[in-house]
Amino acid sequence: MIGGYAFTFAAFLVTGGRLGDRFTYRRLFLAGMAFFTVASAACGLAQTPLELIVARMAQGLGAAAMVPQVLALITALFPPAERSRALAWFGVTVGLGAIAGQILGGVLVQADLFDWG
Image 1 (tube, rainbow, N blue to C red):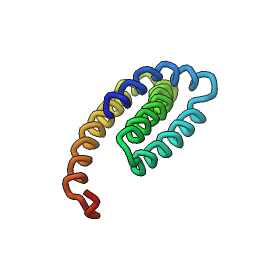
Image 2: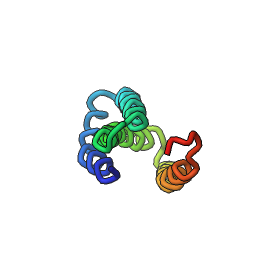
Image 3: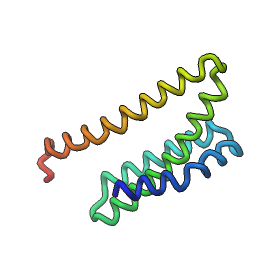
Image 4: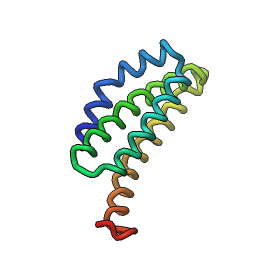
């Protein structure tokens, strides 16, 4: 499941960046966000392991559309003197989000809030 997400994200990252150059960063970011959101709902509604794996791979596609747009916008909007700080904060945010997602996901599964097993 994690490998499927990572594979689709990595495989389409360059394509996502190129599509942002062609169709504007904002438009592709919003499309990627919408696609990622729908894929996230599909993950939550998955009934079989295969459905979950396919939905996670779809999330990877959505992320591959979003992430290059953020980096391109940072590069375009921040002057050279401030760009390194903005990119550093982006890296910190992505790193903490990746760690927090794994930890909080485990906590939520362990908590079994709605007794769903």
